[in-house]
Amino acid sequence: MIRGVAVGVILAVAVALVLASAVGLLAMRDTYQRIHYLTPLALVAPLLLGLAVLVQSGSSVSSSLTWLALLFVVITGPILSHGTIRAIRIRETGDWRLDKADDTDKAGPPKDLP
Amino acid sequence: MNAFVVAAIAMLVALVPCGILLLRGTIMDAVVAYEAISAIAVMVLILLAEGFRRPGEFELPVLLAVLMFGSGLVFVRMLERWL
Image 1 (cartoon, each protein chain N blue to C red):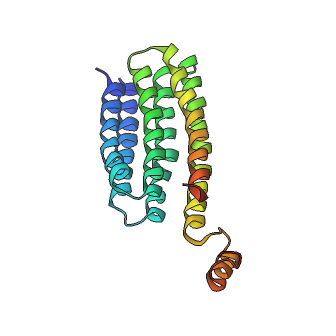
Image 2 (tube, one colour; image 1 turned 90 degrees about the vertical axis):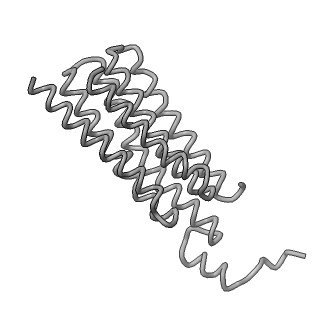
C-alpha cells in the first residue's frame, strides 16, 4: 500500500516535470533559452523514474536495466546540450571561441574569396 | 492499468509541444526538440516495460539511450557547419 503510494507520487512528480519542461521548450524565445529546459527533462525526471522502478521492483534485473538506460541518458544529456550550444555558436559566429568570433566579425569576409 | 502505464500515457502528451517545436522552429530548435523527444521515448519505454511486467523489453530503452547519444552527436556535428 505504502509502496504503491510512494511510486504514484514519484511518478506524478516525474510526469509533471516532463510536461512542464515540454511546455517550457515551446514557450521560450530562442534556442539558448530552450536548452535550459532539457536539463530537468533529461536529468531529474530519469532519476525520479529510476527511483520509482527501484521502489516497485527492488533489486532486480528490471531495475538494473532501468538504471543502466537512465544513467546513460543522465550522463550523456549534458554532453549533448553542450554540443548543441557549441553548434549554435559556430553557426552564428563562425567559431565557438569569443576572441576568434570577434576577430571574424572585425576582419570581414575571407581574403581568398573572388 | 497501473501507475506506470498511466505515467507513460501522460508522458506521451509531452511529445505534442516538442512536435510543434520540431515542425515550426528553426533547425537548431528542431535538434533541441529531437533531444527532448529521445529522452522522453527512453522513459516511456521503461515505463511500459515496467507497467506490463515484461523484463525482456528493458533492453529497448538501453539500446535507444545509446543510439540517442550517437545520433545526437552526429546531428550536432553536421549542423555546426555543413547543413
